Image (cartoon, rainbow, N blue to C red; front, top):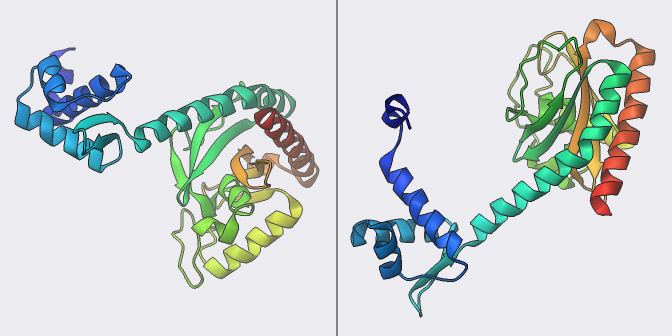
Length: 255
């Protein structure tokens, strides 16, 4: 690792991750003494890291045996990573077909709290100059992806409490929580969401939920394009194609 990179390393975090990595790799619960001997760190330091990691759920602590193992939070993150990897792999052929058909950007996202997280994005040869990139988070209420997912979750997904003022991304963003909830009802009936300039000026997005067997949204897929290119006919055709793609993705995920 170069000197410049070393300047940005937070040593306590690095050591805590070394402790986590050691415990996770053993395949069985370990003691404080074993961890100290393996890592060569001070006993008090290792004890604090073990206790902190246990308190946050990344490790578990069996107090009767005084041993440490992999925690629920650590396993949960591993499961989330596997699920997202599978989702991307299943969705990519459908996303590629949409790009080839409409020559516009296609996005894949999941909901995290009240935000959408972009986990994949395929662009045509004429890439869209948009702010969104893989890993970015945007408010659910200002995106077609978010609206599509919230519409198929209980109680608007906890995104908009009655009377709440939602943050504006542009001057077109719907910020009234009551109006947002009414819009979500329309999305549920229609099966897709349309957002015009609410998240980025001049940009239009059509979003469709990817549903699990119970009918709840686990992700969403969308097509993004400059508003000027999305006439009514093209918008309708894209919505139909996105719904077909989402159904195929859902079918493969539940197989």
